[in-house]
Length: 109
Image (cartoon, rainbow, N blue to C red; front, side):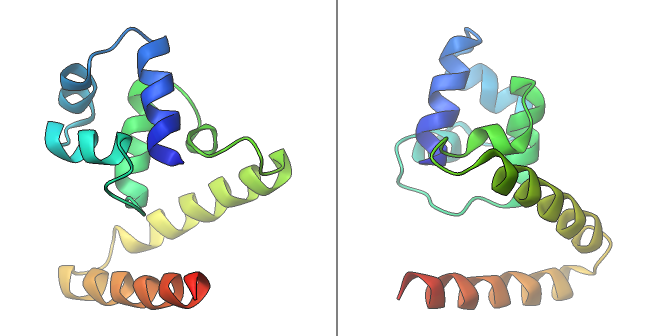
């Protein structure tokens, strides 16, 4: 769902896939896979880069079915998480990502 929303916002801004990828400093192939729902669970850092280029809050990249309160809360949580994780060593960031993958798998089962 995030990818579809990114694609919609990108087109509304008149940006090509290549231009958004370049401006967000992510690979064109990754962005394409994200928009086509081939990639799931992009990192907070990626979402923030894309949102910054699209000039929208990160919460706007998510489906509108969620309430505005939940999105605002999620955006705040993501900001807190990002601020804490960005100062970790590469090894510890990998550990945090692994833990998040475990929680994500548990939620999907």
